[in-house]
Amino acid sequence: MLTGLVFLIGKVYANRILLPLQHLLKDLKRIRVNNLNVRLETFGNKDEWDELIRALNEMLDHLDTAFQAEKAFISNASHELNNPLTAIQGECEICLLKRRPAEEYEEALRRIADESRRISMLIKHLLFLSRHDEDILCRGAETVELAVLLQDLCRQYERVRFDVTGIGAGSELRADSHLLRVAFRNIIDNACKYSQEDVEVRMVRMEDGVKVEVLDHGVGIPEDDIRYIFNSFYRAGNVREYHGQGIGLSLSMRILKVYGGRISIDSCQGQYTKVTVIFKSSPKTK
Image (tube, rainbow, N blue to C red):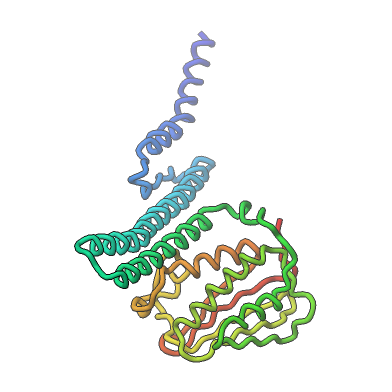
């Protein structure tokens, strides 16, 4: 008799304990790839079950954000790859319509070569953006004197002035020099592209590191666009007539972030754009 009573009481308590888990499992089974925006409801008891549900909802937030970003990335990448492919196909079809002078064939081949290089460069950038930080850090790291690298890079431009303030020895980074050049070249290229005036590159010693500023007095960036400017393939509304793919700044941010750099942008439309990169003292690869 006592054994039966204990069994019944145990079963009642077990059902009460497992009931939230059953509800939780039922709700989780409803979530699929096409409805990652669904969130689990807490029981309002402020206990461990509610903590677990809140943690699961946070995880779903991260998954939904990452999934939407991946969808947008794939859509934009497909669009960017389709444009040069369409141009190449169009050139070929026009050339095949009838016989043409050799000069016209040569001009068509030059345009096809330009579009092919554009595809090749875009694919390289996409492959780089898809790599993990650890893979990037495994590249040939070396001690890079940032001031020397920037000075050498700025010499390649006619309208870029380089100024170093308070920098002696101590601006060394452990990084891949080629990738650092790619990151800063993209920033400087943008500054030169969107400004007819000289571009200023300044490097300043701080108490806990170094700061690099790239300043141009060009078209600027609309205030509503600044928050998205580091997104892959995003282009501000006032620069659509300029040639570009909208991938350079996202690539630069990825490289600089891997090596401990923080990048930010301050801009006023029609007046200036200033890109700031800060490296804390002695950032090193892992």
